[in-house]
Length: 102
Image 1 (cartoon, rainbow, N blue to C red):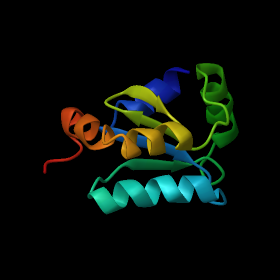
Image 2: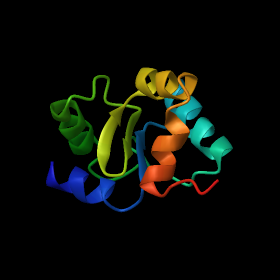
Image 3: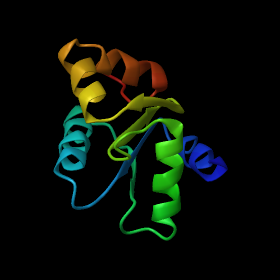
């Protein structure tokens, strides 16, 4: 859990993903289209990715990926991020976190 907390503190936006997950790909693409440069951790490609996935599940990320943290806080997975985007709430949240300038 402490490792996850350290990782999410590194950048304004952190995405935990798996390289084979189509929803993870969609969320990463959305942030890239906004011009946001998130820290992306592919849990199926990094050492101890399975341990991180278990920690995310304990934090309430279900499923564990994609898991999006903005400003150090867990925001949610694909459903939550897309809902925020459709309600036009995602960009203001990214601006407040310092991840988006315009």
